[in-house]
Image 1: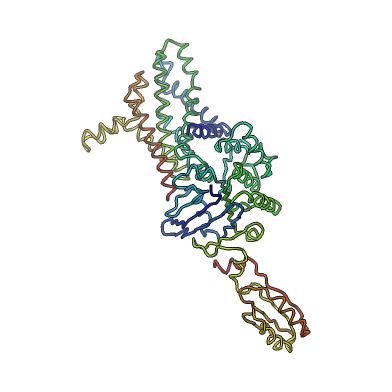
Image 2: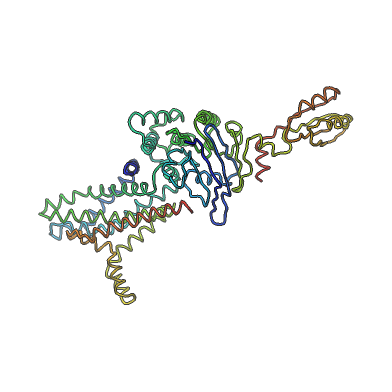
Length: 245
Length: 312
């Protein structure tokens, strides 16, 4: 089982790097995070040796950039018909879904790792708490992992990559926004309070900020992991349902 | 282990459309079944169910004794499949793609190199190994797909229109290849090129609108058409009646039509019973009585015609 997952992962990763896709994604990600950090985050003007302005932009960038990766995961396979080849090889749907997912997640890890000049910069300028930086990176990667799982599942529903992109972005956006006070405030009074607290506890943003604060909270960790597992299960179910349809 | 594929009463509907309606077939090692039918008749859907890509509404696909639905992974190991249009990962090179397939098929080390080499050799794709698949011509893409399907030398091979889009030389080569591997393989090949059925297939299954119309040999397919093996004789009208009277004494004749009567010519069409070949008997009568025939030929029905008559 692990063997097949690894084979799929390897093939997908080769696919990313044999086309401009990986390079463009990584360049844009690094470029945009840097731009957000210095211009919108006022990294230098703040005079604080931390990477908060850098990580602050991540949820908003990932909402757009992760679906641009995930949209092709299954929609492209459906479009080109290669899904028929893949699913008639002696592998299970589980292995295919996990292998493809991990390949994309690894690529995002590479993109995150390649933002290391930010980390070097802040270490040259001052003495940041590197534990906080590490937990922030972990939070960012988990957040991306959640978006990727959402996007992968939704991509399996269609052969149109644009549709996959738009619905995935909307879904990820909803998970980010559910923690924003303007949103919870708007529905306050309309629904019982416990609904609001469930709703805001589902917020990817709140859990992300735990990591950015340097707290690796078990609940936040579990939130991302269960969310990823949930969406990947849904992904497998969608593919198996389409097989029977 | 049984060396055969058995499809048993497959049904599949898409909404209102009954795409496949009770299709069954059994193909043994050494046989090549030509799976024919008009576009949209359910050939590809049947093959997708046979290979486990689609789930049948009911019915089973059994590969060498392994049930596709109960044990898909094992069943898929025993099958080689070329889907319609030979899909592949276009951004990969041919060799990169074949390496991936070899990995999935569980080959490593020396064996891996041997299996890849053999598949490359058989599909004749040696000089496109390092080209990106997206940049290949339709014919080469098809052959890359074929090499993928035969790499693990499967007992069961299912090919969905393997010669579609190939030039005559390539078609010939693919047919040769199919014939060669059929000695150790049970092959189902779908096509809408009927010459292929005569060229390679040992039996024929014709479907139309999801229903099996005929399951037999290509001569059985021909025999579905009345005018098969009928004999047309062109003769001067004054001998017409005499000839007709004498011909009617042949026991294996079912009927005689007289057509196109002009001043100087009459066409006499002699239909045999059950598609028998009656040329000898007819020729004997003509020779014995020295009838001055102007032309004589046997109607050997083209499969195309039989196909049209059965599916329109």
